[in-house]
Image (cartoon, rainbow, N blue to C red):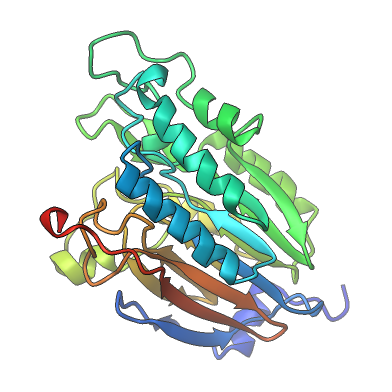
Length: 313
């Protein structure tokens, strides 16, 4: 196609430089992309709510919803762990937690999409010894009103790809970061109908790429299978000849930006911060405000103002 921008030509146009801009304390920055050319798209990305029935935390998620609405975003995207502790619980045990989260989601005025987190897999390995749920994703799908846990949609010329990044494991860590073969085949189908220059945004819970463990544990530390997507290189390879501008990911509760080969990987902090006990590695309770322009991304991490009670810090 004449004038088409392949991923490789995009890298050349950006100088083929790989840049690391990871920092939990980094509050605001911008960088170049090849956007859709169809105007400005404002996003809010929030993740890791860990909603519970505790009234103080319900107040916090109400405050977060208000701060999200104040951004007047076109789209609001959620990176998973909507509730706390679903993995080893039964549906009845977490009903109030789902109520707390869905109350927050209903309060958000913009179009809203969410992906599943490990805490949202209800009854995967019940702590009371009862049989695992036949479909641990059922409660997520029921409360979100979706038929499956991966999807795609377009907005203002951007293609959004929402992934389920979890696989239940018999190992002691109980789950892995993994994008299934079913989804990988589906991604191939989606990309076969996606122009090579169309900008793509991927949303998932487990990180596809992060510098967090090297920064906090040392350069040679190997991340555990329940902390990152194990088959990340295979997944990213599917996008090799496409314009993957942004990956939005959660799970780690830190705010981090890593740019690698023309794609930026934003780890979105957490609405709950350090599991409702204050900040985590200098990342306060918050969310990301992102503006996609024709030639650049603008990103700001926003502390929505909640403070953990002193005895919980």
